[in-house]
Image (cartoon, rainbow, N blue to C red):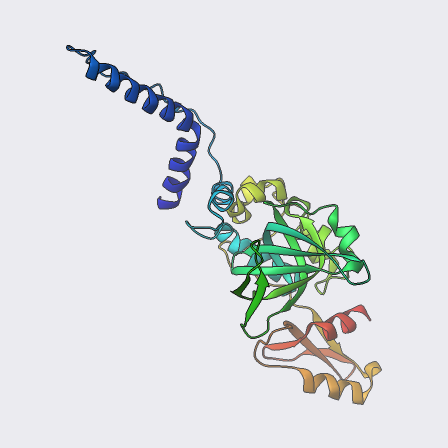
Length: 314
């Protein structure tokens, strides 16, 4: 209710600000006239307020807040997208995919004259600096736009927090906390969807399952209201598979340890299996060839994403 009131009040004020200011000016003028008039005009004039106004989204309101004040005061602009961002990572079997809003775009030229970009980003879990290197800058620049939501794929370069210096507009050195960086490989407007973001890569998840769980989504509707992700009746296709509730069951890749891999390769894979989740690892099902048949190994296992990709591609 509090969030809804936040949106409602801001939308109402935006729709009526001119009327309210005009009324305030008129009231001040009336008071001045009344002070010069022995009897005064008396009475109060009713204000005709607009009650049939369009409601802005929370994101739109906070973007306006950032534009006016230079920072987000009332909250994180992508707070409502946190569940969706987590779902995108699960369904794509990746931990390098982010939902972000671009606050500011800065064009940079290298010493060799090559163009690159530094982006000021906000995500559901904090602020980042996005770096687009020259090799991708021209291709990705077509879609770059400030104050809009994007799906981004890139490596997180999260070094220890440190203080850096830069020259401000007055030419003075200024200290600031250096943000963690996302080294961006791919970027698409949010409404394009996750399949478009990863179109140039093989998904670590089987392609059929990946397509089945994403193609039916209306990303334009999700951009307006990310909570529609878990309300299938509001999506463009009822065929989208999702269990009841926010937790989605992940279809795990099956790693088959057969004789054709060779004894040394099987031993190598077994030593790389983890029994607890680690960064850059995904859950897998292990099947071992025994007596000419494949038998599933009991237990939970995680394997490095790059190795999963190699083994499932064979």
